[in-house]
Length: 100
Image 1 (cartoon, helix red, strand yellow):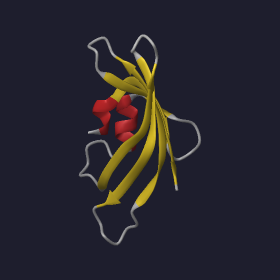
Image 2: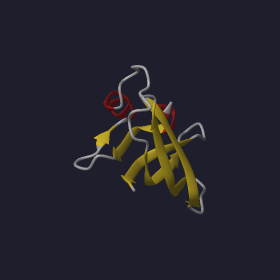
Image 3: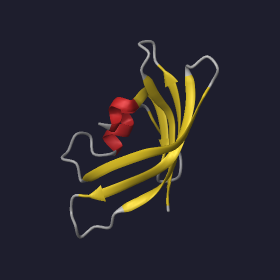
Image 4: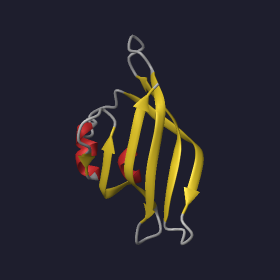
């Protein structure tokens, strides 16, 4: 599901190090269609947009709840830079998160 929000050249850096580039590479890095090991939820606290309305930034909180109740739920903060694609859909360009 997260893949639907990514621009094809998106980058992300959750675990540190060099970011993974591209929606497909990110999808593969997070299991590539295997049964989901948990649920990722995020909620923006603030959003900002450029005057032209084609770029923006959101920041807020994320939470990852594993399917396995023996595993610890994770939570943190994120910042995402967005751009509207040619069809007018918002797509994430850069998504950076850190755990609390």
